[in-house]
Structure formats: structure tokens, C-alpha cells
Image 1 (spheres, rainbow, N blue to C red):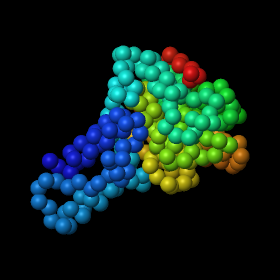
Image 2: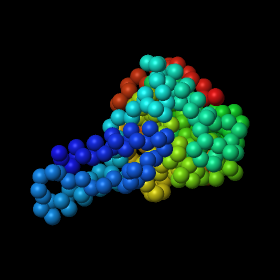
Image 3: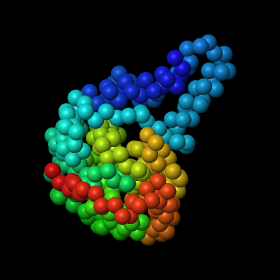
Image 4: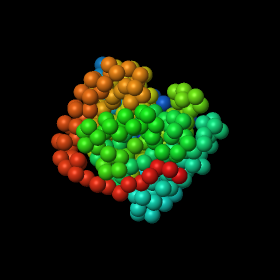
Length: 283
């Protein structure tokens, strides 16, 4: 077996274990081991292979995760051959979730909302006060600005987008989500992504970008270029809240959006004419 084949098998087993346990399995290390081919390699050849595998998993290049995320699993039950039912099932699991301490202070969970089979999956950090009160994502001042940003490139949560967050419950006092909170919630976003099959992903802000790309690199360095997750192009830009605090960021954010639109037009030429089935995020 080659090292590449072992890497695929490792990803498959880790993903299956994560879904079976409902959170990151302790049986698998966070950092993927370096796999070599079964054939005998010299020390120099093995070093080259390890360096190549490390580069492929680094956010400085194209970030990739497991090839397929199982939807019908012990975590979510049967999908009943319906995307809407499956998304509802995920929302129910989110509402029942007690995996981290955020469940103790939330008013409502915020599973996300938008259309089925969206052209774009928009990923934010986590719910704020308005979102916690309504159970819907991006409905406060930052949400209003997000809607304007999306509209500027012919995107709309009721027509061709789905909006979700890294964590589905509001962190107290709007603090950043803790790593263990993001990890506990990651299974839900992974399942949503697998069901929705977006053509592209737009990450809003540092927290969402770092979580998706598995990096500690700041948003100033992450933005302005494309990454790839499971074959899906990903672009990072500033969070709308940052634009409300600092108007000077609006120009680079607009440049990001134009870059995103150009790529989207190549992948989905008629995305601006799509009208999907809207699923409101409130439980």
C-alpha cells in the first residue's frame, strides 16, 4: 500500500470514528502521521515523502480534508433520502447538544439557514445576542451588513446561499469560541457541508477562517487567496463586525468579494438566477 492510500484510509477511519462518537476521537491524533509506501525507501526518499505530505496538509498551500463525509450515521440517524429532512435532523441534534459548556448559557441554538443545494456556503464565527434570541444566524447589525455584502455580488440567503457558524451556541459576552467548543461543534458543520454540497465557501472573519483551515495564521494573511476543502474553493475575508468597527477594511473586503464573484461565475454561471427552497434556521 502506498503512503497516499494509507492517508486516505486514515482520513476515512478518523471521520467514521468522529461521527460515531459525536466529537473528535481520542483514538486519532490531531496531526496526521507521516505515512510511507510499503516498499523499502531510502532515508532521503522517506524525508521527501514526509515533507510532501506535510506540505499538502499545511494551510500555506491547499488544505484538504477527508474525501467524503458520511451523512447517514449513528450521530444523525437515517436521512430518509431527503435533504430537508436531513437538515432538520441535524438541527434537532444541535438543539439537544450538551457537548460543551455553551449549552448552559444559550437561549437558542442557531443551526443556520438558507437554501438547499446553495451555490455558496457562508461560514461565520458564532451567534451573537440577536442570533441567540431569535435562533437565526446573522440578524443583528453585522447580519444586515452581511446581507448587503452578499447582495453586492448577487448572493442572497433566500435564493442561493446557506449561512452557518463554527459554533451553534452563543459564547458568553460574545467572546471567541474556545478550541474545545469549536471541535465539539465541528461534526454539525461537516454534516451540513456534506448535505448542501456548495460550489464555494466564504469564510467571514478570523475565527471561521482559522477553524476551517486549521491554522493560527491571521486574517490579514489568509484573505485574498483561494484554498480548497474537499475540492470546494474557499475564500476568507473580514467579518462584517470588523467592517463596522473599521471602515478602512471595506475596500479590501470588496476586493475579496469581487475575486469570489469571478470564481463563482466560472463554476456556476447562472448562480445569480437561482432560487432555492429556503429553510429558516430557527429551531
